[in-house]
Image 1: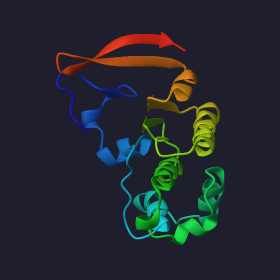
Image 2: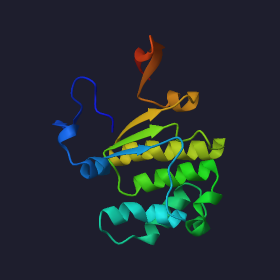
Image 3: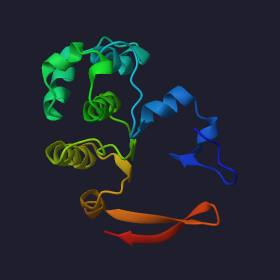
Image 4: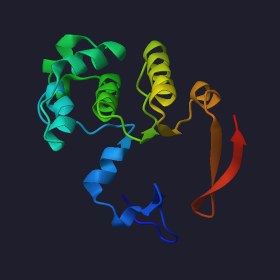
Length: 170
C-alpha cells in the first residue's frame, strides 16, 4: 500500500500504518483488472488464502465458488498460462472471497468478461454486500455497474492530479 502524502488513513478507527500488513490484508482485499496469478494451476491460487491462515483447504468450497462464477470443476487443474482474461479475473475474485473481507476493493474486475458472466459477477458481488455486510469500493467505467452503485464518485484530472468532480447518491 502506498503511504498517504498527507493525513491519516484509518481502518476501524486505527491508523493503517500501525496495523500488521498481513492482518490488514485479510480484512481489506484488492482485486486488480489484470490479476496476478502464481504457481502452476488454478488450484495453487485457490489454496493460497488457506495456506497463509495455516488452515486445511476445503475443496468443496472451491467447487461451490467455481459453480457460482460459472467455471467448470476441471479448471482447478488447468495451467494458469492457459486461462483467458475473464477466467483469470474470476479466479482472482474467488481467491479474494474465500475468506470474506470487511472491505473489497475492485478495479475493473469485469473488463474481460462477456455480458452474461459480467452480469453474474455483478449479482454475486451485490449478494455478498447484502448478506455479508461488506463494503465495496468499485472502480469501473461500465455504465450498468455504475447504475447499481449506492454512491458514485466521479474523478476528473486537474493539473496532473485527480480531483473529485462529482459525488452523488445513486
